[in-house]
Structure formats: structure tokens, C-alpha cells
Image (cartoon, rainbow, N blue to C red; front, side, top):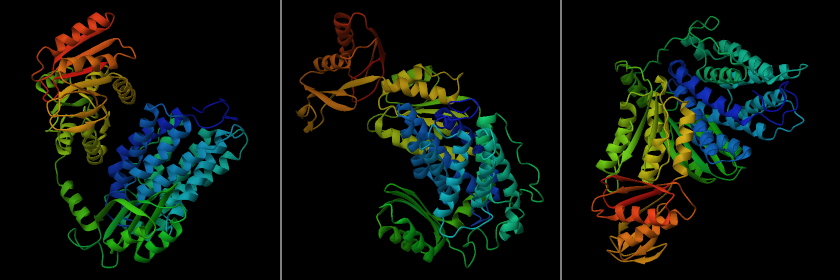
Length: 562
């Protein structure tokens, strides 16, 4: 529903919850259509990944907007996060173009005035998205996602110009026009007609516009299982040559992508240089950060083109023939069982902690200092638990990065089965325990993740340990054998005795108040938990204390305040 007036009058912009719902529904819709879209992919190269790339791009946008909302960001920051998330997470030719479409759309939403109707804003946002997409491509080709979006934008503009137009009407017209334009793409691009398919990227755009219509109207389009016009949607036959050879003698063999830190005036010249060494050139972004894509036979020249203007990073090179060979091998694998339900995957640093997480229903991956789990171990836990929705609790700062990589890989490999994975960036075991305590499988996935994230972030946490070497800490120098107090991941206290340091840490954690102290005893904890409990009961008698035997190494006592 639109923000402001129910008649779609001067509303002052599209509501943020509407944008968030759209992204969620678009992710779900692309997850369902991903395999179908991949099968349609014959242009510009038949590498069978258009649906996957568009899906992963929107997933990145969803994760970015979700993180911004959890941080309490304002409207402008949330819209900026969505655009930047899509830009950073864009995959492949179609994903990079899609990121520019999404970025142009939300930039138009961000500048909407109270004098504009939402219908006018939506129509102009689609126009801006179409213009930006055409401008981003080195040599635009009709019969592609560009054509489909332009048809949608034209229909939206026409509907918005009519009296008492509503944004729901505008999107309904746009989605219908996209579906019609999609059916005509084989008439515009010979390779599609030869394969008997519509354009894959165009189909993805249609799916996304259908999702937008669903948000505002509640209507869901009929799935495309019948022919579109006279064109069916079969799995296309790959060009002759075999999976072990380059796709054809004349076409580029590699896809090169990278992010580029460079000034905002470099894009036109960069597109021109890349166009001289390849095709399917797309350069999108701005404000010092660009996403660059090209199909070429000269990988080095493609990267050097970026070096002339700035700093390329996150460079990714794909050999098309090898990619198709992998896909052919995967196609021979048996059908996997249906995913269902929701599970939590938690990293536990000790036997007692593992028992606590398991008793609360989590799938446990053993970790802790010195034996942190690999991305592969986390991926195995995520995909092996059989759940459709998975929440990951890393419970350790370095493990957060591995968890994000595992989550991204899991959704890329199993998104077609509807798998959704959310990583809550817990940096401590006690944060994970607090988040798991409010986990509720019965509520919506996004709401559950939001509640767990908020709870974890409000936990003040600390620990004590013994210094293993001479070092300089934020509390001053320490020597081997000194007692160290940790607060929020930083060494904040240096002392001679663990018990005394533990009480200093607790005192600082409770300085801002609190209702519950959680203590987790580790290996060789001795009476640390008992001393800490007695201290809280004496100086903070209204605060409850819970003590667990965690069995973790290196940190004899973990502490948290909620």
C-alpha cells in the first residue's frame, strides 16, 4: 500500500515497507523462476546462469536493505543501501544491468516530492531505470531485457498520464506490457527464434515487475507453463562444439567482472575501451564505485582497461565452456528432497555450549579459537539440515565472514529449491545464546531474523583470558601470564588475577544497567563463576544471574548483560 493518501494523491514518496516487501517477494519469485530462466539463457552466450545471476543480485539488495533497517537507518540511507547492495552483489551481464535498473529506481524514489503522486513517481522511476540500463550497455541490443523494460516504462507512463491514476494501476500496466514484449523478443533476436525461447533476461524483468504488481494489488500472475505467444519455454539445445570446447570460434571465451574504484567521469571511455576487446559490455555505478562486465578473449586487457582509470578489485573470471560442463554434470545428479521448515545453525566453542545450542533446537558446528569452522563445514550444515529457511549464528567475528560466504553459496546452489539463509553477525557465544532464546519458528522468517538480530545487538558481552605473549592493548601493555578482560571484543582490562579482572569487566558491563547476567564457565574456570555471582548478588541485587558450563577453551569465563 502507498504511503500517504489512499487515493494515490500527493504522498511524499513510496513507503519503505512497500519497498522492503517488494524486494522480499522479488527474491521469492526469482527463486521459483530461476531454473526456468537459466534454461532460457541462449543470449549473449548459452551459459545457463541468467536466472541465477538475477536472483543473487536481488538477494544482495534484500540483505543490504535488511541490514540497514536493523541498524535503524533513515529512509535515504535504506534506499541507498539497497542500490549499493545490488551493485556490489551483481552477478553476470544480466545481474549488472539489473543492479543499474534497481539503483535508478530507488534513486528516483528518494527524490520524490510531496507534490508528486506515487503513480507519477513509479512511472518516472521505470523510465529512469530504462534509460540508465540502455546507457550502461556498450552496444544495446533489442529483443533483450532492455526492450522488455522499455515497453514496461512506456506503458507505465501512458497509464500515469490518465486521470486519477494509481500506482497499482501503473504497475499492472507495466507488468502486462513486459509480458507482451517478452513474447515478441524472438522476433527481434534471431538466436532466440532459432532456439524457440524468449529472452532470459527479459523473463527475469517480467518476474520482477510481476512481484511489484503483487505488492500493490495482491494479485499473483499465472505461472508461465504454457507457450508465450507461439514460443514455448523448453531447455534449449547448446550450440555445436561440446561442453569441453569454446562456445564458438568467433565468440568470446571468458566473462570478466570486477568492481572498480574510479572517478565518476570514467564510464564512457571505459565502455569504449572494453568494446574494442569484447562484447556484452556493461559499466554501472557511480560515486566512486563501478561494477564492470565484459565478454572477451583477452582477460588481461579487460583488467588493464580498468587499471587505466582506478583500482579493480573482486575480480571474477569465468570460462564459458567450463561453466557449461559443470552445469551438464549437475544436470545428471538425482533430484534432491524438498526443503521444509526453519532451522538455526550455531557455532559452539565448547562441549557445554554445544549441548546448550542443541537443547534449544540448533544444528551445531564445532568451533572456537584455534579451530574455527571452514566455509565448507558451515555450508554442509546449512544445506544438510533440510530446512527451507536457515538462520546462522557464527558467534565469533572471524566466523561471520565464513558464514556469509557459506550462506551466499548455499542460496546460489539451492535457491531454486526455495532455500533462504540469513546470517546474524553474532561476535560472541553469549550473543548467540541470547538470539536463540528469542527464536520463534512460528513467525515470519524476516521478522524472526529481525528479532534475533536486535536481541543479539543489545547484549553487552565480555570475557577473561590469560595473555599468551607480550603486547600493547587498549588498556596498556601486558606480559605473558597477565589476566586480560575483554569487552565487546577489545582487551579493556589488564590485571594480575582473573577473578579481580572478571569483576571489573562485570562492573563496566552493568554500568548502563541490566536485568540479566549470563555467565559461561570454561575449561579451568575454577570458582570464577561463583565469585562473579556473589558479586552481582551483593552489588546488584535486582539483577538475575544464570550460570552455564560451556566447556570453552582459552576463555575461562564468558559474561553478558541484557
